[in-house]
Image (cartoon, rainbow, N blue to C red; front, side, top):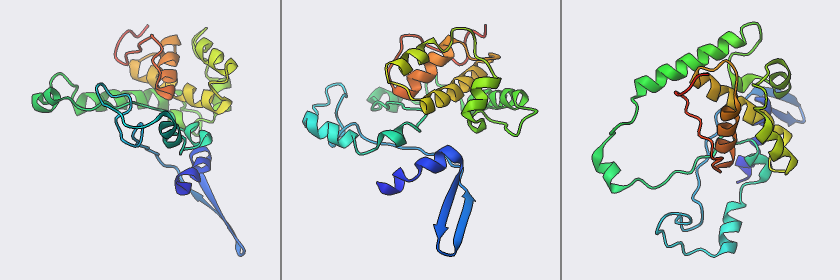
Length: 207
């Protein structure tokens, strides 16, 4: 568990520092961290008809194994439900193809690269929080929900920067020139895992 916890600083700075008696070495360490966990020890908490066997204290203890500072650096939190038998048998159905999704991602990256053309950055994830907040404005009123979350102690300053990066990515995927309220709501939803009652389709209305 400690090996995971020490990844917090490299996630923030993009480098790792190794200090020894002979000197200090600074190495690049940009990486994508993907975490996966069951909701409880038995894995059935919250699932329809799951018959979870865990007590509330067991669930709290299990979910508390990852620290708050590390989770504060996780941008996207997605609950993955069990695959139904009909989905396993029915195949892909109406799901988008990899080619369609790849094309949309490529267009979004091109939009970001054009926006940051005169800067050292090319991706939303590379832009420091201060720069993102001061140089590229979101739509008027788009930060309202995030500001409320900060007032309630549900969102930290670091969390706001990460929500902004995700919101810019959502806007790029939708073809918008800057994040609107719906993009910020979607970014907050992805960060907390709690639905906000305001859906943001990445391929929908581009106003």
